[in-house]
Image (cartoon, rainbow, N blue to C red; front, top):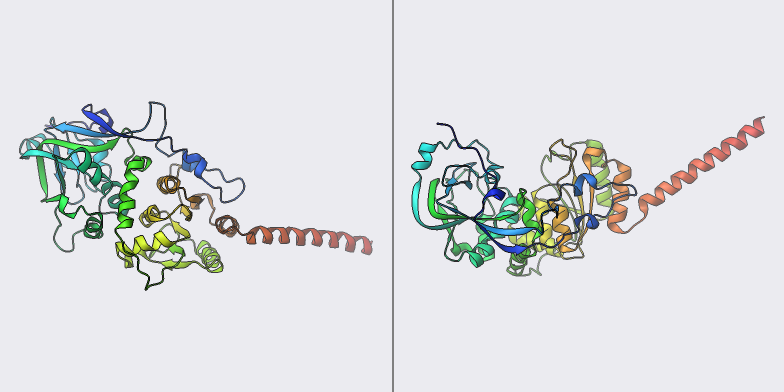
Length: 384
């Protein structure tokens, strides 16, 4: 027997709306890093079309649905008939070999469950931005359902390093149930999903951001230590910043403007929240650590070094959405379009810092060229 064909989560009909999104006006939030920069490759990816009514956040119920937990396949959902819900498997690291006979042997559970994770939840971005915000929504709208997460696996297995810290800070450590790897069929399986096929469309809802505010309030201030105000998120062997010339130019501009390099993997979650809550400027390549701008205030100024990660001529807009929802100043440079050269970098830092250093350099260079041309003409006439 063959596996049943997938079904889109947006095609599941048993649902109720728990939140309605506002028009995010994301395109208006992009501040060009230099004159003539075209943000089309970025804003065209924002998952808000407005053609089929407002963006909705729904509780989707699958009576007799199945939930799969296992390394690389955590959170894949199947309907009672065995059809995999395609969006829940987007980030699966292996193809789930779940045949009909295995589905029939799923462990029966006589209660309702709600799942809040996807197969990439051990990534900081997915854990912090897509899983954690669903916990208060599940508690508020599905009070009789058990919130389930995969149980911690043996030491050395891949797992969300920040999970315990985040659960403790959020206050939900006692409200979730760890479940061993396996295939389960609860009485009713619930998802919290938006009426769009992009998981990160969750960022478009005001209700989601209450989770981050609560996390920030849970972290006490640490006045005994100094946290830098201007930060560059540094990663070891960052594949997005491999051009040595671009790295040298970037380092020069960072140093000139007083930025300090930080490695978030060396800080616990409380310190990361403190760091971003007090920061005034953040520069970073596109990556999970930039998620922490949600803990920054509206005065935070962000420069993202983005790139076409899929080779499709588009950029990922998730941090633009986060900055726009926080009312933060947001700029970007597209490494795929050679925008990490010294000139666009300098112009971007000028705009980010409110200075005119690069623009003044350009004017002085232009003046020098004009003087050189004028001197050349005078010399030529004198020789004639």
